[in-house]
Length: 86
Image (cartoon, rainbow, N blue to C red):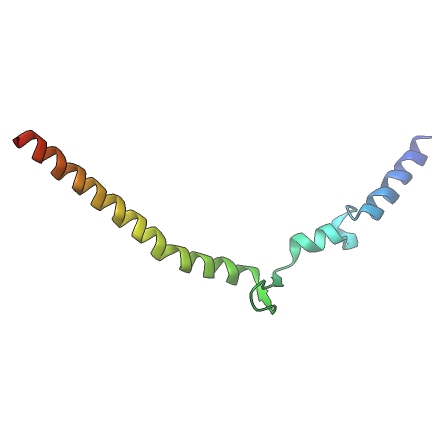
């Protein structure tokens, strides 16, 4: 009976695409693919290229946020100094 159940489990796993990675299941291939389709241009691109592009685009935005925080801190310091002198 146990042997019959084990066989059924492997058949179910195969149908669901979660079988051993050596079989090349759909799930395994999705994880291992290094390329994907770009949503903007529709071409095949490296996943690492997408990450690099996102990082490049986010960097100036992060710099602006950092600069804004610095300026807000300076404004707060000036405001406190002004109130202390009143």
